[in-house]
Image (cartoon, one colour):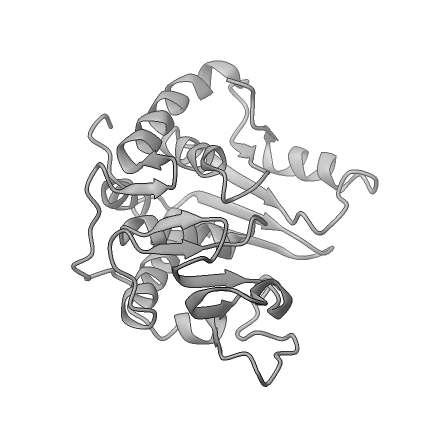
Length: 245
């Protein structure tokens, strides 16, 4: 897949019926998305970005650093439409956050709130009357399952402030080639963690998918280690942490 683009990546991913992304949060909260279902959420989000938030190629979109299945869908959709993922909202077209406090003083044309619960259909937190925010969970479902927009990045379009599309996808391809040699043959999934606004996190996600592994994401707000849940999840999902490559 040396000529990989985000659109080509998604074309391949949506043919995958096996698990692509597995999200764990509070006890009993597990969400499994196949490649096809994840692609649907990315497409809906891409249409939401373009049609609702007026995002154009090379517009900046601020994302929260916390990993969540929703923020991964937003990040991939942002790249699909040619947006640049940034950590701060200065001159951003849109700023996404899990809480209104994280949008205080955000210098963005659109403020967007993300619901943290796994399958919540709207934002459940308190929203100050002074904050004019779009509810991502409530709005995104109404958009089409196929991205038909005209926004498409060039290989030189910034994916992050320091990394172009070509660079992030080249890095993902290189990691994908190394992953099978670094993992036991019985492993079917790898965990990713860290800051979503750092290029390496999304690069690892792309690489795992290209190599055919599911991606396990554990809610960073939950303590999985001390309760023993992390070990059980790894056993159940035949998963390991992302190896050092």
